[in-house]
Each structure stands twice: as structure tokens, then as C-alpha cells.
Image 1: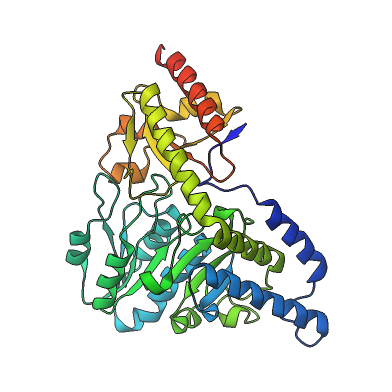
Image 2: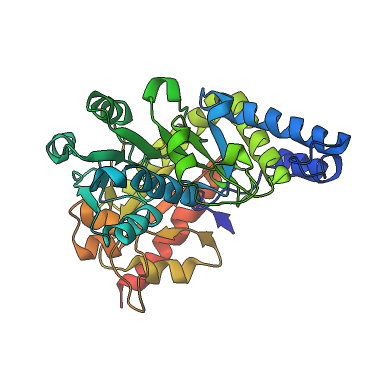
Length: 382
């Protein structure tokens, strides 16, 4: 099996797994049980991990809230902002039409209330948010701008610094779901100046079920935490800390800090090679998204005349790929991301997302393209 679905999840790094295994043994106590030595030891290890993860994004460790991942962080931020500002009247949120479904769904859920309004910004054909549309959408009651950092389907990067500046110029909170960016490219909260950032460990060789909400507006989260309980994470996310998972995330962050320059250079070379070979195999292939301002490991392309769902079904035992189409019901429907970019149904339903990582080789890409080509040619005849 050639694994080319790293944007869905990355294989856990062996050093991360070793770190987690050791943590289960060495720091088994509850980190909130500071009345005895083992609990104190676990607490100090938790805070050491917090500092490491904070270093990864140039953050103050006090602004790092451990949780289960980006979906929880997105829900936490949207709900908390609405609850915090609703006593002042209707709350207006600006987001984009290509956000992850977890963010769109919570916005749609809250929009059913009379005191919540949501504006979904359009994107251009490369998948970038239209800045002029953002400026036009601003209202006196706009409380939050939430724009994802890098799109999970196309890899297109958003102009975060420009969006952040607009938000701060108008005294509006800024949130970004950076689950696909962090761990693939450097990310600094000092440069981008967000108020909230959502992060998932399993996107950068860490364990599943653990992540971070970066938050420099803690009063907003404290007013309405998503999880109530024993007051862990300074009251912003209660529940016994998953210390082995957090230790694994911290190790993955440590590895990123040490190795990201070499890994990014390698992935850029792989992407350049893959695009060249793709166009040799498929001169009619359509690359979806922005080729240059995008993640170094992601290519989304369409092969007209064959649905990607059919192609991937034939390849599922040999190559792990993703379709850009989401099965929203019993009927396969086009990706909301590609539709927002203006692609028609044929192009959307023939789209394939290929995402690789630090274990991927040129030989993997060659073999995958050979398999895709042979399968495509067979299916095209029918």
C-alpha cells in the first residue's frame, strides 16, 4: 500500500510512539492531583509539554489550551464568542465558503437562533478568500472573523496576515483553523496575530484525539467553556488531561522544530516532480487550487471522464488517496470547496487529492501514477 493521504492523518512517528509509551509508565498519575509527588511530577511534565507546543507557534505557554483537536477548538471558539457577545445584541460572524465542515456546521446550527448572523465569503478560482468581499461584509456587530489557514482539499494558503490586520483595525476577533498548516509550514502567532488558533496533533505525526486551542482572549472562553467540569486547563477545558497524548504531541512539535526546513525542502521537490509527471501522464489534467501559494505536500487534480469515487474504489487496496467529493447522503455530491471555487460538477466529481509526507519517496509517486494511469485508461473505455 502506498499511502498518499497525509492530509487526512499522518502515520505516528516512531519517536512520538516511544515518548507516549514511556509517559504511560513514568507519568501515570493525574496531573491535577498535586497533593502528592506522582501527581506533581505529572503536572510538571504537562507544563513542559505545553512550553514545547507553544514554542512551535511562537506562543506564550499560558495561551495554550490542550483539548481533543481542531474540531473541538472550532466549536469552542464559535460558541464562546456568540455567548459572550449575545447580551449586546445580534452577533455577526464572518467565515468562508470553504471552511471545514465542523466549522460550517456549528455556524449553521447557531444561525438558527435569531441573535446570530453568519456571512460566508466567496473565494476565487484558486480557492483564496476575496479580501474586498471581506471588507464589504463588515458590520458594526461583527464580532469574529474565522478563516482557515490552509484548505484541507486543495492546500491553498489564505492571506492570514492581511485578514488579521483587517480584523484588528476594526476591533474584531480573528480565529483561524490551522490544522492543515501547523506541522507542515512554520506558523507564528507573533507574525499573524490571531486571537484563536485550532490545531490537531495527528496532522503532524502525533496521536489522534489530542490538539490545542491557542487563545489570547481567555475571558471569552471562560465565560462559556465547551466542557464544564473540574476546572482543568485554567477552567477553559475541563477533564483529566490526556498526558500521554499531550506528550506525543509535544514530541511531534519538537521534531517539527528540528526537522521542518529539510522536510519542507524535500516535499517541495516531490511536488514539483509530481506535477511534471502528472502532466506527462495526463496532459488534460486540471490542477485545482493555487500551485504556488499552497501546502508543499498537497496536489488536487481532476481527470475528466471518470468519477474519482470510481477510480479510488479500484485503487483502494494499492494506493491510499482521497476524493475531493464528500458523500453527503446516499448520493455522491460535489465538494463544497470545489463548488465554491466555481468548478462544475464534472470537474469536482473527478477530483483527487494526493497528499504526501516525510516518508514518501519518488518511487512511491512513480508507482502511484502508474497505477492511477492504468486504472484511468481502463475505466475511460467504459
